[in-house]
Length: 86
Image (cartoon, rainbow, N blue to C red; front, side):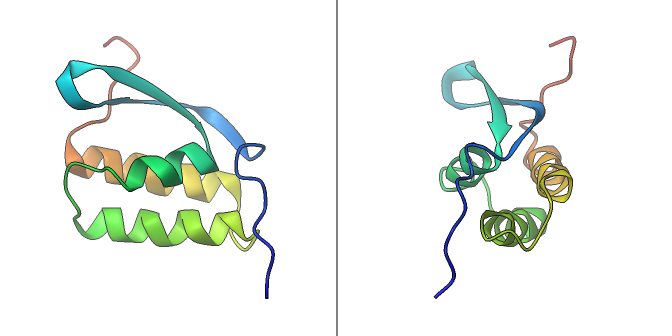
């Protein structure tokens, strides 16, 4: 059985997303991104891709940059991605 890596140590540039009640959350690592996907406001095609890529990243089979990019794509699809100026 493969061992899962510590996703909290797999950091990336912050991704700001809008969560319930208009709150903003900064996601900064693979574990937080993966956990956030569990309470996502909609599960489209990019959500499914991001969930798979993040899972692969937790096992060291996908790099952090690819995991972040998939998370950003899913956030854009769901309409929760915040820009720098927001």
